[in-house]
Amino acid sequence: MPKVNILSPEIISKIAAGEVIERPASVIKELLENALDAGATQIELHLKDAGKALIHIKDNGCGIEKDDLQKIFLRHATSKISQADDLFAINTLGFRGEALYSIAAISDVLLRTNHEQNVPASIANAGWEIHVQGSKHLKLRPCSFNQTGTEIEVKELFFNTPARKKFLKSNTTEINKILDIFIPYTILNKEKRFLLTHQGKTLIDLAPCVNTKTRIADILNLNGSHLIETECILADKNISAKMILGNINISRTRRDLQYIFVNDRPVASKQISFHLNNVLRLVLPPNSFGMFAVFLEIPPSEIDVNIHPSKREVKIKDEQVICSALRIAFENALMTKGGIKQTTGYRQQTTDDRQQILDESQNRPLYFSPKKDDNGSEFLQTEKKSTQAHVPVNKQNEFFSNVTKELFEQKINTLHNRLQNANYLGTFINKYLLFETSDSILMIDQHAAAERITFEALITQMQKGTVAVQHLLTPFMISLTPQEINAWEGSSEKLEILGFSSTKIDNETIAIHTYPALLKNPERCAQEILAGGELDKFDHEAMARRACRASVMTGAKLAELEIEFLRSSLLNCLDPFTCPHGRPTVIELSEEFLSKQFLRT
Image 1 (tube, rainbow, N blue to C red):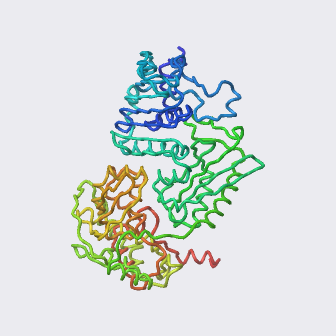
Image 2: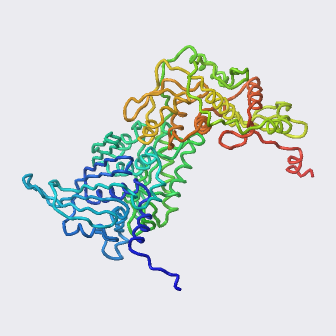
Image 3: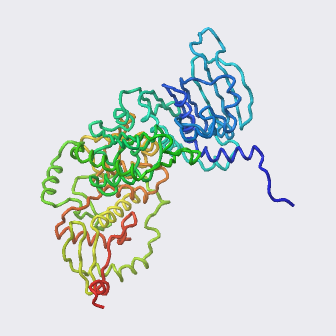
């Protein structure tokens, strides 16, 4: 009996759709590209249920002729190319003819369009409407659509592919994915107007502007004075690049402000990203990422965009040569035009603040001062006056519940005991603390150790339902990206549990009224928590881990008393030998190991 089957057109269409359409953001990408290819200067996008219930996009492009309406939903039907050689000179965003076919295969699509110019308002049915559901053409008829352009409604996405629909995430996550797609096109097309709404609420409303630098500052809510422009030209290869980069004052905890465009197409390039981030490491702290937007113009014959149906991957000829040139120009601009680090000055100076400045000038940071909790146990605390924020206790998430007494005692009998009895020797580059045992040297990473102490203290407070918070006389403002604002709106209660009391000022800014007293850099901590995540899914442990990533200073010079307190606080932790992010806090160099290095064995 034969085992090879020829798949039906219905199955083929669903398989093909799965390659192009992964989630609502994929639909929006394809429809945006079609609108831009049609020459639209105004694009409106309206969503319901994060695009799962409705994606409604309107543009004022050239529209679609009536005779083409029956073809556009067929597979590989396109007006962008007509022969094989055209693949080597692609100047449009779309060209494969898969987008509308794939969308219609897994949703209910209603398209209205008008190709005619200057249609009198008195003509009732100037446009045409086509309705397609699951690749089935239901009707084609005249409609009332007098303006030139196209309007598409995509409803009930994945209605006939429940397995794919089941894997869609929450509205917050899906909206963030949509913003990740939408924002690069707004940067590329500064001269066009873009509007994005969700459930009737405006998320983005951008008017045309005169230059790309202004558009980037507007859409990402950045200070334009912190942006640098530079160019790079490879005349022998007919390649040019315009770069806009952020100086030392723009620092993020993720690569969410980094964009690469090739021939006006948003792309992903690991090579370019790697080289530019290496340059940014020269001026930014560890685990921080800067902002850049690179606009490459390359002869179409030198690139291949036909790698994947999503068209985000490209192959570039002589990519290494281009990366080297970009790196040199990028580093030169950053070093010569970068400016200096500026403070935010987010609150009025109090007596405690002035004392802190005095203490820090004497290299005596305040975050190593012992306090005691309700049970008399010491934990890390600031010397600022604080009050208790009463928050709900999550009994389902007990971080310490899996740490048994036997495991704890086992630690005490090994490295724990040696560290407790070791003699302090000194510090190395204000980063590593050195201790001597009878047969080894112990090295403590003071930054990782402080993170562990702060992390466990914060977890303990959260589980008790009372987080020690610092109240601000004047709240400080945090400028957020659209993705971060979206995350904040869905999770402000989670921030309250952590000790951040915040309110929304406008579509770009929130005000922080209180923050956990344990944390040293509340602004950066808040951004770390909001960046790229859906807080509703985070338990106490995940929330505290994110907060601690940006909370503890490194490289501070500590007095010996502070070092002793750090050691004792670390030994009181239930998991003292790893930081919250998995790095070791203590390493041991045994006498045997050192003897081998000196060839004594």
